[in-house]
Image (cartoon, rainbow, N blue to C red; front, side, top):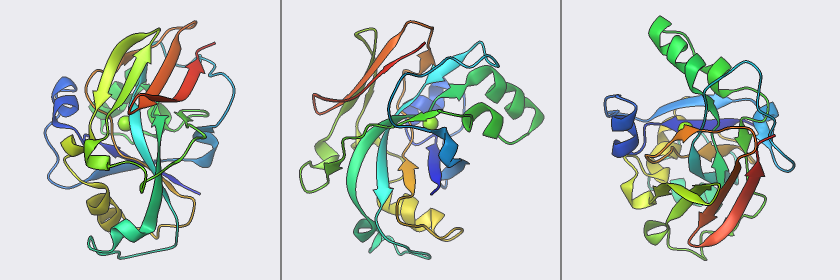
Length: 202
Ligand code: MG
């Protein structure tokens, strides 16, 4: 199982990171050891600037490669929410040196994921809204209608390069409002008002 993460998929987030808008999807991978399905998150010792990035996540339901955008919708049936934890200080060092991001993005438990999956037949994705609260303060609001690249475009693009397999996850990018977390924080993510993920930082 692999975790595919899309970067800069919302114009407002690209702007807050002082990044150019992508002309094609930008993706990177996290290993399966990044998943955190239950329990607390323990603040890693190697960073002093750990950021939350709340993201809509889709799960791939069947094997595919060279998937056309027209048929991409057949490859996923459910959504949920996850967090793409990022060691922003390490990411900044990597960016400056032109190095890969794995050390900043792919560490253990850097991908907390809700265990509640919502069938796409139940929600209209284009009308969906998700929110991330830090200690009950609203930090991020995301609307899939603001995606630069749609889920279908992402699936078509990534599957040109790597075979997508059943159970693979796609983190679809984070909206504006990312910020640092501290030990003791509680992060809560909701989709259309329903809490899907709650996480304590230890
Ligand atoms: Mg992200």
